[in-house]
Amino acid sequence: MTRQDFEEVVKIIGDDPKYRHFIDRIKKDFDDSEHKGIPVAMHAYFIKEGKESIGFCILSLSPLKMRRWEKTFIEEDWKTQNFQIDISSFELMYLYIKPEFRRKGKATQLFNKVIKRSKVLGIKSIYAYVSDTDNAALEFYRKSGAKIIHDFSDETEGISAAFMVWKLE
Image (cartoon, rainbow, N blue to C red; front, side, top):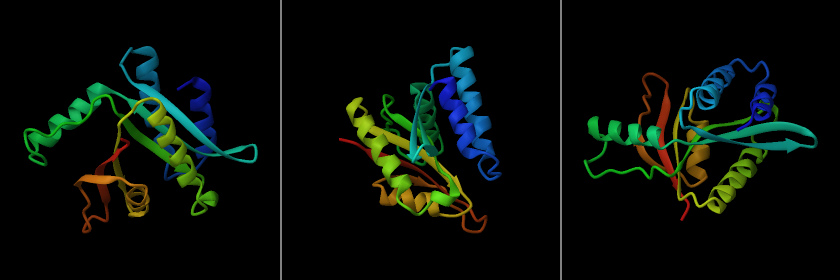
């Protein structure tokens, strides 16, 4: 991910208050990777409508983070001791489409581009932790072929959350 990619992400999100936290998190990860030498390889993908960028997807390749997830799943007894995450996989960090372009197939187009590119790069799995106050994102990912590894949803709290995987083989 380049500085120009980051600036494009900021421009796409604009002043959308629900997703401004994406910018802070992406900036932290980008800065950690660029300045602290923390091994996070981030990849940005964009979708346009005409000349305007209307959405993005950020993937990362972080074996250390995947190992932390794996360890947490075992320690919390969400999975058995033999549970393994492919550490050479991508993590889907963010997928965002401007509100006025949602429900028009743009997220599907972008995600298909991401899947295709990941396969070309030899990536065999994409993992994601998804959490929101509604289940739209989770439903989109399920329809896109994600398999739920663990569901963290809490209806009483109004939270829809899960850790999931797409197997690309």
